[in-house]
Each structure stands twice: as structure tokens, then as C-alpha cells.
Length: 294
Image (cartoon, rainbow, N blue to C red; front, side):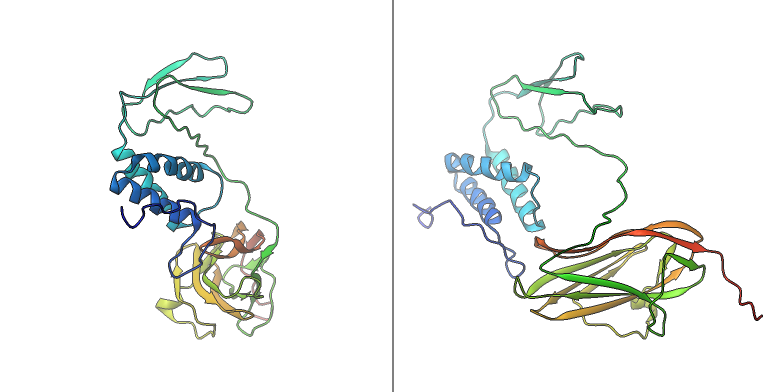
């Protein structure tokens, strides 16, 4: 208490890509946790409203921010005194009004699978307590991003054969082996970039060769860590100012059909504004092409 007596609870906004992974919001969440720990629930309540508002917003948050924000809110909820159980009533358009007593910290209502477009959902707090409402939608995603985008980091991709010649992957014969070569460049507008993630998701008709298990013989730049999965490869690395790194993965056109090649992205894991997007496209795996000379 003596250490923080008279301390300013306002934090200048900032963001670190590495080291402590700090940010203005992360620090406010830590302050909230401390206020709860020392029993200053008055200051904690004011901070809680700010932290809860940021968590409920549509803005991007790093894993550090989300984790520490939720931790602080959960500790506040555990210590806050609630008189009775909060209650709400909700109504969909002109349907019947439903009354709910919230005897748990979380209460969910399934509004059904019918189309809610154009309908109004009305929720009324019928108690003295504070109630937070969140609507969650789910469905089948649309085709991935088809636009090229770059901010503070640049990315380019080409597909080659094993002789290094560029090939067209929009129509490959079944059994074709080839290489996806991605080059990532840091122009330096944001200084050295730490904790960069390259995410390469592949169409289900292509198979990824796990070079950690099988070896490859192909050369590429160093990285901090790489995760091979059935349908994607994720590579993590740092990128100093005005330097580039090239990464390669081996693929096989394995299953005949038409598939969507998702967008490839490179981004700073702890700053969503540093991002490059390579658009996706449709690709085809055709029947094997027999050599006419045989």
C-alpha cells in the first residue's frame, strides 16, 4: 500500500513486441489485480469498468492482454459483494418476454438457428446489480481474404519445382511435388520486429512434407520455431531492420479435385498492425499426366 500510495492509475498507451510483452491495457489489468489483492475495491471498481470495456470491445488484443485482463476481472468478481442474484428479461422482436435469474457468473441462452437478420433482441436488467451482455454468432465462414495487404512488413510467395523454376499451381497433375517459397522483408518503418509469425495454410488436396521428420535437402533461413500440422505450417522468427528471410516447404498435389488455397499471412504476434497478407485462390489437382513418349 505504501508503494502505490498516490500512484497514478492512468497508463500511457504503448506496446512491446517482445521482452515483457507489455502494453497500456496489460498494465491496467495488473493494476486492477493489485487493487483487489490489497482490498481497495473502490479504485478496483473504477479500473474494472475500464478493463471490462476494453475486453468487450472489438479491438485486437494479444494473448498477454487477454489473459491478464480476464485474470484481473475474475479476481474482482470473486471478491465483489453482490446483494442477491441479478436478473434480466429478454425478448426477440415481438415474441414472449423471458425472465431469467442469474444465479451463476455466466448464463447463456440459445436463440435458435433461425435467421435473426432484421430481428431485434431486447434485454433489460431487472435488478440492482451490473450485468454484461454478449451476443455470439456462429456459422460457415466465407471464402478467405482475396486482397493483398502490407503494413510495416512485406511478403511474397512463389511456387517452384526442385530446379528452382517458377510453376503455376492453379492446375497441378496428381503426384506433382513442388516447393512453396515465401520471402518476408522488414523495411524498417517499425524498427526490428520480434515474434513474427508466418502462417501457411494449404488446400486439403495438397500434402505437406514434414521436413523435421524426413529431412529435405533444401536451404532456407533460420527460424526460432516451426510447427508442422496436417493442413498448415507455422514458422516463428525475428526480423531485424531492412533484412529478409526466405522459408520453403515441400508439398505434393495428392488428391484430385478443386480446392481453395487460403490466404498466407505474416504478422507480429504482439502487434496486429504489423501484418502482410497474400491473397488466396482456387486450385485444381488433375489426374496424372502420362508421358506421351512411353
